[in-house]
Image (tube, rainbow, N blue to C red):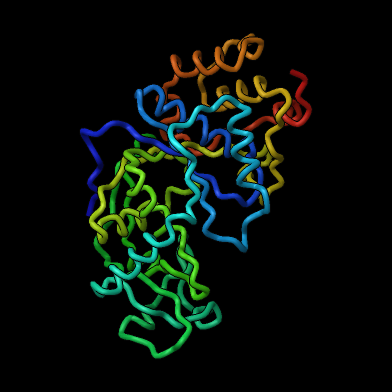
Length: 313
């Protein structure tokens, strides 16, 4: 089963960070790539703060991310959307899937599933509650099939998963009532009319589950472009969990040019001497995806990281 990609529509892209910490260099790459892709397509670029998981959120992080984007010269279209505002639509989607018997309550805890088989996607749910359960506190799982869910990634080529055997039925609303990431992102991309999603390759394995939900809910499937992730010199992904520092608000031009370099655009050595608007103009005119094709990681050299942490311009 292949996703039906939106065609014939005005381009609409987005950057959708979670407010679990400040914007770091790895996140900046995703923001820059999605922004340049939208601007080169003469399309819209939207910003959405994905604040649907309060236990993981850092107070003030969403506002700090917005301030950083503004300081670096990003110009988004329309108002910034906070994902929690869409909770009624998220709940409606869950109820639709329950009503159509495409989803069901599940009582299983992590302890119950401790001996379940695993795959690279995590626990493969064995279907324990598919035929019903009588617990009062339950999560909601969506039914999957073993038909292949496939899509053509603009950078990484054809991707395919058989969800029933690789992940099993997956959670769309947690036991604590919070909406799961997969459902929230699918509903919000539909509400915002997103036609293409540019994000890090670390999220590529999530895409078939999101396409499955799009198909069950009757939504169009956007195009996908998963860029390589930035890595530490030791090969670890640059992330909050691996100690990635917030991008500085001093030395913005130097950091932005470093991001363009990491995206394989080969900026001129003196580009950081120009204004932010001139740097963006150069980047939009010179944006190309060919150097990123089939690349999964872009190492950020130790000396580059030192420059980011101690900017001088």
